Length: 279
Length: 236
Image (cartoon, rainbow over all chains, first blue to last red; front, side, top):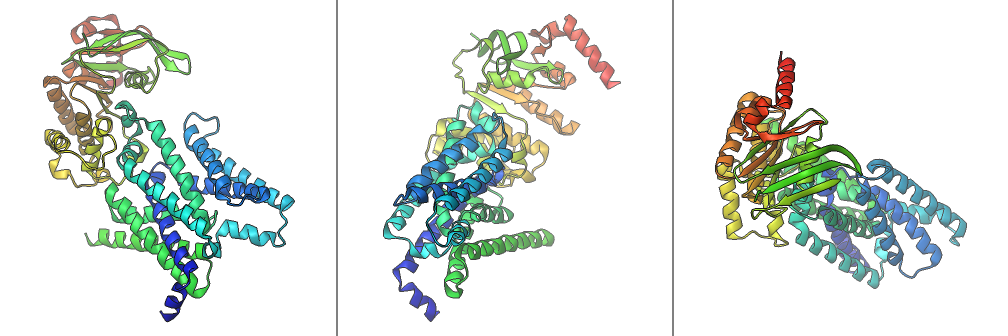
């Protein structure tokens, strides 16, 4: 405990905790929608795109990666969600295609152009997250705060619409809701979340941050509002616990958080089964 | 003026027409059944009426105070809905989406409308229940209540009784028929010839030579006789 308080006296640890909690909160919000729309893997696909974009940003030597990564990821998100049922290459195939292509080109570009002495270390960091969350600059913390705030506000404003277009797209269309517009908004919000979450868990583990809290909450609750709130709460608690464990024991931040998320999911699964059994 | 009138409509996807010469009218208080074989284009017609699909040729006109999106729609169940964690109440409230805007909370009138719709469908006691745990008949009544929140004029139903057992089906049919008697126009896709002949006031039969007319005219028509004979053969 004392050790923890000692760590907490460092501003960078406090920043990391704040940013981590916000990212966890944002990423859990749309999880329910993505899982139900059968888009669980879009997080994965987009994060690979973000990895590719990061490689490009690195080569261009842009001061802040986010300004390259964010627009590119948003564009891919729009492409993936928008193409939906009309596309030549459908859903999962499109995601697989975009994600491996981005991954391959990203690594290729890094290999050709990188001046870094420790290339595999850099790549590993981008893929699995790192302690980079502990080395965020003040500007990055603010950017992260602003983006999370935008995501949360948008989610609250669109809450009913998100429910409408997730539950029954056809009905929504029939009564004149602009389904395509809201799907577009969802795509953009997801892209923003992915770019945010890359700082925390790295691009390979983002899907976990998005879907595990939602899946866990869906075991426990049976209406949309409760599931949404529960998944936010679960996600925040898991992120906090994960980060504290990581800081105390020196384990990698991203994988520790995801491990805690997995634990939470199985706990909820067991609770659900025992409830059913006792009935 | 009719709620909905179509004159020489051609339907299809991506410029290829699958159905031509569709003409029909739906007036206040009508009960229109759309019959036809599988693949005859019944669902395409509904989607076109609802504005999800553009007609290839011809026009759909809305009149008598009906706006394009004033239509309540009871769709077929989708994959997503089968494991969607939503309470009955949340789903019925989503019927208000077109008029609701971005407000986070609902007004008194909206709550009243939802309560009335749920009472009408006899699902008030299920308000907090989880939708996916209800029986098929209850689920359809929830979706009907939602549709009633969206419209007071026209209900469009896509095979509302598919997958329901006979007793539940007939309950649902009489519920729909009551709504019709209260003045709501019904447009329903159906496989169920018997029910169509029992409840409908008008029949639209989709085939190479589409037929539209009152039920009595349909029974006397060439297409009608052929279709009924075919159904008889299927049943035996």
